Structures are given as structure tokens and as C-alpha cells.
Image (cartoon, rainbow, N blue to C red):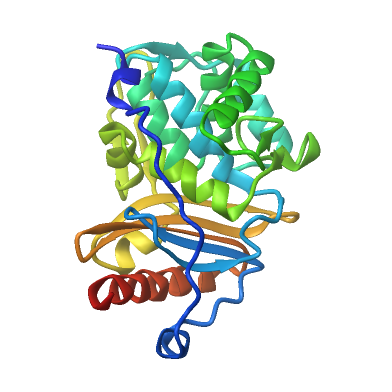
Length: 279
């Protein structure tokens, strides 16, 4: 069965944020990220801060990479890592999954390599294979963004690296909307909610252990994922999701500090959950 069948095409409605009451405003956590957005699965916006400003989003780009792959691939598809995949990540100084030329992995494993350690080598391999070719794959990413209504999003690569053009741009609101679509896939949700993924040594690849860079998974209950990111231009970014009082909460912090993004996200999940509980 094709993975695309598991991803619903239903539109997730995002409504205009409601004005905070004095009581809500008093309890609202301080958010020092340059851009931020919190929305729940009922469509209620709990916080917005420059949420429609177009900015680079670093490795949050890989959420769209995974989404496009999941629409086209079988988890059992096998991809051979090329010298170009390894060189691309090393040349740009990107985070890698430690892949080597000639290793062969299933798409399932490469999704973990992409989303947990944020491997640019895995991103390059997936984009190259499912374009076919990176140019065609990036075009698919942008077509998908338009089809999902992400009107303030444009991609220039599959990994969010600075070249070319800072990986493109998006907004906090668009990234939250994309996450809501992506989390409708049980496969995506399983991958981004995994703390550690190990692949044993086989005849076609070495043993690998990939650890999730999203510290929020270990800091709060009910966290679903989703993705961290960092470049000089984007600052520290975090796209996160959790379950609170029967609803899914999705949040985005862009242009933040490293550790602060996780502590802020934890507070925002609880804040949104309280707003849901007390109406």
C-alpha cells in the first residue's frame, strides 16, 4: 500500500486568533522568540507573534521533505547512498546522520535519519531519489505547499541549509498548518515522536544510532514531536506538538535561543491546554 493513502487530504481549518481576555493575558507565558504561533486542533489560536512574517526556518524545511516522500514512497523502498549525498552534507557543515557512500537503507530508516539527527545526507538522498533529482523534488515541495494553502512558503532546498537563499522562507502560521497535515500520518507521527532509533549492522549498511534533537520529548508529557532547526539566519527554531485536554496543540517558535525554545514550548503547551480546559 502506498504511504500517500495514509495521509488525509482533509483541510485543517485555521481560524483567526481570538483576543485574549485580561485573565488569559495574565497567564500567557512570555515568548521571546522573534515569531511564534500556537493553535489547537479545534482551530483556536492561543498565541500569535509576527506569525505571518516570512523568514527562513532552517531544518523545519525537512517536515515538508518528509511529507512529500510519504506521499510517494513505500516504506520498504531501498535507496543507495551516493558520494554526492555524503559530500553535500559535509561541504555545507550540516547536521548529518553519518551515512556513507554505498550504504543501502529503506525509506523507513531514512525518515528516521532525516528527522531525528536532522541528517542533510538523508535529505539529499531522499530528494535525489524521489524527484527524481533535487530540482524536481524542490518543485514538488513548492507545489505541495501551494496545494496545502501555505501561501507564504517557498523552498529552495530539501534541508533548510543556507544555500541557496537560506533554504527559502515560511511563516510560523504556515509551519503550524503544515504540521497539522503531516501529523495526520501515523508514520510521520511515529517517526517524529521517537527519541532514539537504532539500525543494526547488515550486509548493506553499518550499525547506526540516531537520537532525536527535540529535547521537548523528554521534558513534558503528551509530546508528539515535531522538529528542531538552526542556521545563523533563522536562529534556533522549534516546531512542536502535544496533546492537552483532548485536543492536539501545535506550536512554532522561530528565531529563538537554543535551550529557551524548549522551556518556552513546554510552558506554551500547558498554557494552551489550560485555555482549552477552561474555555
